[in-house]
Picture 1 (cartoon, protein in one colour):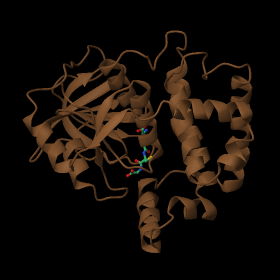
Picture 2 (tube, protein in one colour):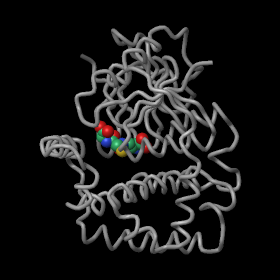
Picture 3 (cartoon, rainbow, N blue to C red):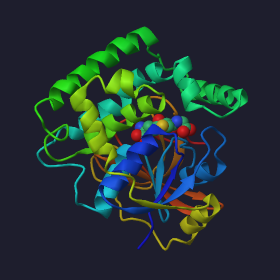
Length: 309
Ligand SMILES: N[C@@H](CCC(=O)N[C@@H](CS)C(=O)NCC(=O)O)C(=O)O
Protein backbone atom coordinates (compact mmCIF):
# COMPACT_ATOMS: atom_id res chain seq x y z
CA UNK A 1 0.00 0.00 0.00
CA UNK A 2 1.27 3.48 -0.84
CA UNK A 3 1.68 5.69 2.20
CA UNK A 4 -0.21 8.91 2.79
CA UNK A 5 2.38 11.66 3.24
CA UNK A 6 1.20 15.00 4.64
CA UNK A 7 3.52 17.96 4.08
CA UNK A 8 2.65 20.29 6.94
CA UNK A 9 3.71 22.18 10.03
CA UNK A 10 2.31 21.98 13.52
CA UNK A 11 0.90 25.52 13.80
CA UNK A 12 -1.07 25.55 10.52
CA UNK A 13 -4.87 25.58 10.89
CA UNK A 14 -5.43 23.99 7.47
CA UNK A 15 -2.92 21.27 8.41
CA UNK A 16 -4.98 20.75 11.58
CA UNK A 17 -8.06 20.30 9.40
CA UNK A 18 -6.21 17.59 7.46
CA UNK A 19 -4.87 15.95 10.63
CA UNK A 20 -8.36 15.81 12.15
CA UNK A 21 -9.80 14.31 8.94
CA UNK A 22 -7.05 11.65 9.07
CA UNK A 23 -8.01 11.02 12.71
CA UNK A 24 -11.72 10.83 11.85
CA UNK A 25 -10.94 8.09 9.35
CA UNK A 26 -8.47 6.34 11.67
CA UNK A 27 -5.70 6.50 9.06
CA UNK A 28 -1.95 6.04 9.43
CA UNK A 29 0.21 8.67 7.72
CA UNK A 30 3.71 10.10 7.43
CA UNK A 31 4.43 13.71 8.39
CA UNK A 32 6.95 15.82 6.48
CA UNK A 33 7.69 19.04 8.37
CA UNK A 34 7.77 21.95 5.91
CA UNK A 35 8.94 25.53 6.54
CA UNK A 36 6.28 28.07 7.59
CA UNK A 37 7.56 30.63 5.12
CA UNK A 38 9.22 30.66 1.72
CA UNK A 39 11.54 29.32 0.44
CA UNK A 40 10.19 25.74 0.43
CA UNK A 41 12.42 24.06 -2.18
CA UNK A 42 11.45 20.48 -1.34
CA UNK A 43 7.71 21.17 -1.34
CA UNK A 44 7.88 23.17 -4.56
CA UNK A 45 9.88 20.34 -6.19
CA UNK A 46 6.74 18.25 -5.73
CA UNK A 47 4.08 20.85 -6.52
CA UNK A 48 5.79 22.93 -9.20
CA UNK A 49 5.03 26.22 -7.41
CA UNK A 50 2.07 25.77 -5.06
CA UNK A 51 3.36 26.71 -1.61
CA UNK A 52 0.34 26.51 0.66
CA UNK A 53 0.04 24.22 3.66
CA UNK A 54 -0.81 21.35 3.73
CA UNK A 55 -0.16 19.16 0.68
CA UNK A 56 -0.89 15.42 0.53
CA UNK A 57 1.46 13.15 -1.41
CA UNK A 58 0.59 9.60 -2.38
CA UNK A 59 3.51 8.21 -4.38
CA UNK A 60 3.92 10.51 -7.40
CA UNK A 61 0.43 12.07 -6.98
CA UNK A 62 0.31 15.36 -5.11
CA UNK A 63 -2.99 16.77 -3.81
CA UNK A 64 -3.19 20.51 -3.17
CA UNK A 65 -5.85 22.10 -0.95
CA UNK A 66 -7.71 20.45 1.93
CA UNK A 67 -10.94 20.40 -0.12
CA UNK A 68 -9.29 17.92 -2.48
CA UNK A 69 -7.24 16.20 0.22
CA UNK A 70 -10.62 15.34 1.81
CA UNK A 71 -11.73 13.64 -1.45
CA UNK A 72 -8.48 11.64 -1.62
CA UNK A 73 -8.85 10.53 2.01
CA UNK A 74 -12.41 9.51 1.20
CA UNK A 75 -11.04 7.14 -1.49
CA UNK A 76 -8.54 5.75 0.96
CA UNK A 77 -11.17 5.08 3.66
CA UNK A 78 -14.78 5.57 2.47
CA UNK A 79 -16.12 5.09 6.00
CA UNK A 80 -16.80 7.11 8.04
CA UNK A 81 -17.67 9.47 5.22
CA UNK A 82 -16.80 13.16 5.12
CA UNK A 83 -19.61 13.61 2.60
CA UNK A 84 -22.83 12.15 4.09
CA UNK A 85 -25.63 11.83 1.53
CA UNK A 86 -27.97 13.60 3.95
CA UNK A 87 -25.76 16.73 3.92
CA UNK A 88 -25.31 17.68 0.24
CA UNK A 89 -24.50 21.30 1.11
CA UNK A 90 -21.70 20.41 3.55
CA UNK A 91 -18.91 21.03 0.98
CA UNK A 92 -20.30 24.50 0.33
CA UNK A 93 -20.37 25.38 4.02
CA UNK A 94 -16.85 23.98 4.28
CA UNK A 95 -15.71 26.21 1.42
CA UNK A 96 -17.25 29.25 3.12
CA UNK A 97 -15.52 28.37 6.40
CA UNK A 98 -12.17 27.90 4.61
CA UNK A 99 -12.40 31.33 2.97
CA UNK A 100 -14.85 33.91 4.40
CA UNK A 101 -14.72 32.60 7.95
CA UNK A 102 -10.93 32.08 7.82
CA UNK A 103 -10.33 35.70 6.79
CA UNK A 104 -12.77 36.87 9.48
CA UNK A 105 -11.03 34.79 12.16
CA UNK A 106 -7.46 35.82 11.22
CA UNK A 107 -7.72 39.55 12.12
CA UNK A 108 -9.24 38.57 15.50
CA UNK A 109 -6.52 36.00 16.26
CA UNK A 110 -3.60 38.08 14.97
CA UNK A 111 -3.80 40.88 17.52
CA UNK A 112 -0.69 41.61 19.64
CA UNK A 113 -1.74 39.25 22.47
CA UNK A 114 -2.61 36.46 20.03
CA UNK A 115 0.63 36.93 18.08
CA UNK A 116 2.58 36.75 21.37
CA UNK A 117 0.90 33.43 22.20
CA UNK A 118 1.30 31.95 18.73
CA UNK A 119 4.96 32.92 18.51
CA UNK A 120 5.84 32.28 22.18
CA UNK A 121 9.51 31.33 22.54
CA UNK A 122 10.66 32.53 19.11
CA UNK A 123 12.73 35.62 18.40
CA UNK A 124 11.35 38.89 16.99
CA UNK A 125 13.21 38.28 13.71
CA UNK A 126 11.07 35.15 13.14
CA UNK A 127 7.86 37.13 13.69
CA UNK A 128 9.12 39.84 11.35
CA UNK A 129 10.02 37.35 8.62
CA UNK A 130 6.61 35.67 9.00
CA UNK A 131 4.85 39.03 8.63
CA UNK A 132 6.83 39.91 5.50
CA UNK A 133 6.17 36.48 3.95
CA UNK A 134 2.43 36.65 4.60
CA UNK A 135 2.24 40.25 3.31
CA UNK A 136 3.44 39.15 -0.14
CA UNK A 137 1.44 35.90 0.09
CA UNK A 138 -1.81 37.89 0.46
CA UNK A 139 -0.91 41.02 -1.52
CA UNK A 140 -3.89 42.35 -3.43
CA UNK A 141 -6.40 40.97 -0.93
CA UNK A 142 -8.62 43.43 0.90
CA UNK A 143 -8.49 42.44 4.56
CA UNK A 144 -11.12 43.05 7.25
CA UNK A 145 -10.29 45.44 10.08
CA UNK A 146 -10.25 44.07 13.63
CA UNK A 147 -13.46 45.97 14.43
CA UNK A 148 -15.33 44.58 11.40
CA UNK A 149 -13.96 41.08 11.87
CA UNK A 150 -14.87 41.00 15.58
CA UNK A 151 -18.45 42.01 14.85
CA UNK A 152 -18.74 39.44 12.06
CA UNK A 153 -17.15 36.65 14.09
CA UNK A 154 -19.54 37.31 16.97
CA UNK A 155 -22.53 36.95 14.65
CA UNK A 156 -21.14 33.84 13.01
CA UNK A 157 -20.49 32.04 16.30
CA UNK A 158 -23.98 32.96 17.57
CA UNK A 159 -25.45 31.41 14.42
CA UNK A 160 -23.49 28.21 14.88
CA UNK A 161 -24.63 28.15 18.50
CA UNK A 162 -28.25 28.23 17.27
CA UNK A 163 -27.59 25.52 14.69
CA UNK A 164 -26.03 23.22 17.30
CA UNK A 165 -28.42 24.23 20.07
CA UNK A 166 -31.02 21.58 19.22
CA UNK A 167 -28.68 18.92 20.60
CA UNK A 168 -27.36 17.60 17.27
CA UNK A 169 -23.85 16.20 17.55
CA UNK A 170 -22.46 17.77 14.37
CA UNK A 171 -23.35 20.66 12.07
CA UNK A 172 -25.61 18.64 9.77
CA UNK A 173 -26.93 16.08 12.26
CA UNK A 174 -25.58 13.06 14.06
CA UNK A 175 -22.85 12.33 11.53
CA UNK A 176 -19.82 14.58 11.04
CA UNK A 177 -19.10 16.03 7.59
CA UNK A 178 -16.36 18.04 5.88
CA UNK A 179 -18.07 21.20 7.21
CA UNK A 180 -17.31 20.25 10.82
CA UNK A 181 -13.58 20.06 10.06
CA UNK A 182 -13.57 23.40 8.23
CA UNK A 183 -15.26 25.16 11.14
CA UNK A 184 -13.08 23.38 13.71
CA UNK A 185 -9.70 24.45 12.29
CA UNK A 186 -10.74 28.08 12.56
CA UNK A 187 -11.66 27.64 16.22
CA UNK A 188 -8.44 25.68 16.78
CA UNK A 189 -6.46 28.72 15.63
CA UNK A 190 -8.46 30.99 17.94
CA UNK A 191 -7.58 28.60 20.76
CA UNK A 192 -3.92 28.75 19.74
CA UNK A 193 -4.13 32.54 20.02
CA UNK A 194 -5.40 32.16 23.62
CA UNK A 195 -8.97 33.09 22.67
CA UNK A 196 -10.90 29.92 23.48
CA UNK A 197 -12.49 31.31 26.63
CA UNK A 198 -13.32 34.71 25.16
CA UNK A 199 -14.76 33.51 21.86
CA UNK A 200 -15.66 29.81 22.01
CA UNK A 201 -16.63 28.87 25.55
CA UNK A 202 -19.23 31.64 25.69
CA UNK A 203 -21.23 29.38 23.37
CA UNK A 204 -21.97 26.15 25.25
CA UNK A 205 -23.09 24.05 22.28
CA UNK A 206 -20.23 25.26 20.05
CA UNK A 207 -17.75 24.58 22.83
CA UNK A 208 -19.02 21.00 23.38
CA UNK A 209 -19.09 20.40 19.61
CA UNK A 210 -15.51 21.69 19.29
CA UNK A 211 -14.29 19.15 21.88
CA UNK A 212 -16.21 16.43 20.03
CA UNK A 213 -14.39 17.23 16.75
CA UNK A 214 -10.98 17.54 18.46
CA UNK A 215 -11.72 14.13 20.00
CA UNK A 216 -11.28 12.50 16.59
CA UNK A 217 -7.55 13.00 17.11
CA UNK A 218 -4.96 12.81 14.36
CA UNK A 219 -4.74 9.11 13.50
CA UNK A 220 -1.25 7.59 13.69
CA UNK A 221 1.67 9.48 12.22
CA UNK A 222 5.39 8.94 11.87
CA UNK A 223 7.86 11.57 10.66
CA UNK A 224 9.44 11.40 7.22
CA UNK A 225 12.32 13.39 5.71
CA UNK A 226 11.56 15.68 2.80
CA UNK A 227 14.36 13.98 0.82
CA UNK A 228 12.75 10.58 1.40
CA UNK A 229 9.38 11.92 0.28
CA UNK A 230 10.97 13.10 -2.98
CA UNK A 231 12.63 9.72 -3.44
CA UNK A 232 9.24 8.02 -2.93
CA UNK A 233 7.75 10.19 -5.70
CA UNK A 234 10.67 9.45 -8.04
CA UNK A 235 10.39 5.68 -7.41
CA UNK A 236 6.59 5.46 -7.78
CA UNK A 237 5.59 3.03 -10.54
CA UNK A 238 2.81 5.22 -11.95
CA UNK A 239 -0.01 7.60 -11.13
CA UNK A 240 -3.62 7.45 -10.00
CA UNK A 241 -5.94 6.97 -13.00
CA UNK A 242 -7.32 10.24 -14.37
CA UNK A 243 -8.75 11.56 -17.62
CA UNK A 244 -9.81 14.79 -19.28
CA UNK A 245 -13.58 14.75 -19.55
CA UNK A 246 -15.30 16.00 -22.73
CA UNK A 247 -16.89 19.45 -22.96
CA UNK A 248 -14.96 20.97 -20.06
CA UNK A 249 -13.12 23.56 -22.13
CA UNK A 250 -9.63 22.02 -22.36
CA UNK A 251 -8.07 19.20 -24.35
CA UNK A 252 -5.99 16.39 -22.86
CA UNK A 253 -2.28 17.15 -23.17
CA UNK A 254 -2.77 20.93 -23.38
CA UNK A 255 -0.02 23.05 -21.82
CA UNK A 256 -1.78 24.87 -18.96
CA UNK A 257 -1.18 26.68 -15.72
CA UNK A 258 -3.31 26.24 -12.61
CA UNK A 259 -3.34 28.89 -9.89
CA UNK A 260 -5.43 29.83 -6.86
CA UNK A 261 -7.64 32.85 -7.45
CA UNK A 262 -7.52 34.42 -3.98
CA UNK A 263 -4.04 34.48 -2.39
CA UNK A 264 -0.87 32.41 -2.76
CA UNK A 265 -1.55 32.56 -6.48
CA UNK A 266 1.76 31.07 -7.73
CA UNK A 267 0.89 29.20 -10.94
CA UNK A 268 1.79 25.56 -11.55
CA UNK A 269 2.59 24.76 -15.18
CA UNK A 270 2.18 21.35 -16.76
CA UNK A 271 0.44 19.13 -19.27
CA UNK A 272 -3.26 18.61 -18.62
CA UNK A 273 -3.90 14.95 -17.77
CA UNK A 274 -7.10 15.11 -15.69
CA UNK A 275 -10.19 17.31 -15.70
CA UNK A 276 -13.60 16.80 -14.09
CA UNK A 277 -16.07 19.15 -12.42
CA UNK A 278 -14.25 18.54 -9.12
CA UNK A 279 -10.59 18.29 -10.05
CA UNK A 280 -7.84 19.38 -12.42
CA UNK A 281 -4.60 17.38 -12.74
CA UNK A 282 -1.38 18.45 -14.45
CA UNK A 283 1.71 16.40 -15.15
CA UNK A 284 5.09 17.98 -14.64
CA UNK A 285 8.64 16.77 -14.32
CA UNK A 286 11.09 17.62 -11.60
CA UNK A 287 14.75 16.69 -11.43
CA UNK A 288 14.39 15.17 -7.98
CA UNK A 289 10.71 14.09 -7.87
CA UNK A 290 10.46 12.72 -11.43
CA UNK A 291 7.11 12.81 -13.26
CA UNK A 292 4.54 14.13 -10.80
CA UNK A 293 0.77 14.53 -11.16
CA UNK A 294 -0.35 17.64 -9.28
CA UNK A 295 -4.07 17.69 -8.39
CA UNK A 296 -6.14 20.78 -7.55
CA UNK A 297 -9.83 21.31 -6.84
CA UNK A 298 -11.71 23.32 -9.50
CA UNK A 299 -13.37 25.62 -6.96
CA UNK A 300 -11.02 28.49 -6.13
CA UNK A 301 -8.54 27.73 -8.93
CA UNK A 302 -8.13 29.04 -12.44
CA UNK A 303 -6.92 26.96 -15.40
CA UNK A 304 -5.28 28.90 -18.23
CA UNK A 305 -3.70 27.88 -21.50
CA UNK A 306 0.03 28.53 -21.28
CA UNK A 307 1.19 31.39 -23.46
CA UNK A 308 3.27 30.13 -26.39
CA UNK A 309 6.95 30.88 -25.69
N1 LIG B 1 -7.54 26.52 0.51
C1 LIG B 1 -6.33 26.02 1.09
C2 LIG B 1 -5.79 27.04 2.10
C3 LIG B 1 -4.46 26.65 2.68
C4 LIG B 1 -3.79 27.81 3.42
O1 LIG B 1 -4.08 28.99 3.21
N2 LIG B 1 -2.85 27.46 4.27
C5 LIG B 1 -2.06 28.45 4.96
C6 LIG B 1 -1.53 27.87 6.27
S1 LIG B 1 -2.77 27.47 7.40
C7 LIG B 1 -0.82 28.74 4.17
O2 LIG B 1 -0.59 28.12 3.16
N3 LIG B 1 -0.01 29.69 4.63
C8 LIG B 1 1.20 29.96 3.96
C9 LIG B 1 2.21 28.88 4.08
O3 LIG B 1 2.05 27.93 4.87
O4 LIG B 1 3.24 28.99 3.41
C10 LIG B 1 -6.59 24.67 1.73
O5 LIG B 1 -7.76 24.36 2.04
O6 LIG B 1 -5.65 23.86 1.86
